[in-house]
Length: 113
Image 1 (cartoon, helix red, strand yellow):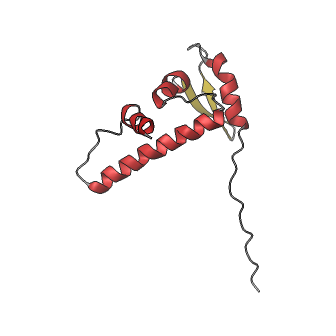
Image 2: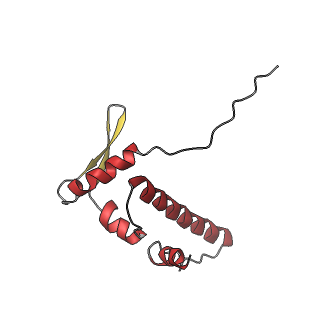
Image 3: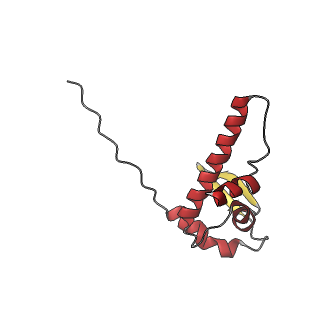
C-alpha cells in the first residue's frame, strides 16, 4: 500500500495540490486516482509481465510523436516512426487492441404486462 501511495505522490503529483475550495481539491484528487486506475488497467490490458511505475510507463510507452486524424468515418492514430520505438511497441499495442474486458451480466428488462 505504501508503494502505491508513493507512486501517486511522486509520479502523478498527488502530494502538493491543495486548492482553496475543498470540493475542488477533492475533485482533483479523485481525477488523479482515476488516472492511476486507468494506468493499472492499461498495464493489465497490455500484458506487461512486471509492474511498471507511472513515470516508467510515460517515458517508455506513451512518449512518442502521434497524430489523431479522420479517414472517412474512422478515427486513425498515426504514430511516428522517427522516434525509434515503434517496432518495440507493436506487440504491446496489438495486445491492447485484442484485449476483451469482461463486464457483469446485465438483466433483461421485464416486458410490461
